[in-house]
Length: 501
Image (cartoon, rainbow, N blue to C red):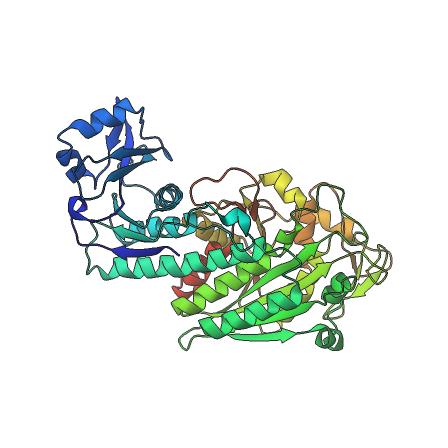
């Protein structure tokens, strides 16, 4: 496990395995960034020449290792490219990405000192968060293949930061709490479905609540049936692993408002009777990414002690085909009494969310955000790195988008065209779970909106694209589960606590 600390020792005197400095893009090549001045002096002008000789340009993400030859206590310098040097300082996410790149480059290192331009608590926190997110790896299931693999960097010491800077210390603590919550969400997404069914997930939530200081209530399949949760039960009835609805509750004595967070938790999605085609099943352990994000966000809120009341709702089920599974053409009676004609059992996420949203709104929150790996259509619209935001309140949608932008999670506001609602009209029930194929992600949002009562500011986050990374690892983005939306939800909660929303 990687730890962050503030060091008062001068860079040249620090006993470490590696010293980290930055480089920016200059007219004639890489330029050593602020924080590395003592190294430049110790190399007597040769550092810039060496960077030129190894082809360094200072481009973002570029990494070069240079021996110190006794110029410092540390035997090696790691130069990380920061890109163009902005006049008003590096953005928080640029520093976050630098932290991720540094962490991955330091794999196997015990101790590293960092001498980068980390001016102010925000910069310290962003870089530290990037380090802790970039150091993540999922090794639980490695046995023989674990041999020869190096551990993440153990200790990272931030130099040039005042040791008594309370703001910097608080930023490091927040970064550690945030990264731990994101990494827990990543672990949950990466855990194979034979080891994470609804019951397992609920048990993890109970343990997490005990450790973090929030209440957890679990409704099993018998209680769900007694209370009429037809959506969650309908999705889960084809599996031997029975569904659960988990309520997370955090309260603060000074809180004036409540926000509800609802997460889709399909621990494995085969599509049910509407079976997914070959090649579309292998990553479906990630279909509980929304619930993982909600658990992570509530955990971080509790550990930070934010002055806001938060309820979290994990709608957990496994969607499997069997003789007991819901069939296309069945009608489900949802929690609250509304009926839904199921035309496609692979459009199951909206069914479990609808039940959970209805239940969450009974407690009269002022705001509600649901998070779900909901539609392939959103991936077609926005790609693999950006999630969509839909809402019944333009101001709230803007506030959620702003929060996501500030924490470096790419998101984009999406509309809810009223003309698409008619495509979900059913000849025999209140609504169908499918509508127009064109704009399918928006249709899903319109379906969910049906279950949100007037007076509640609601936003729907479709994280189908960025929840699971099968592509290149860059910055602090992990392979596999990314933990996306944890930081967005946490920032929204912080903004509510600070009366920014």
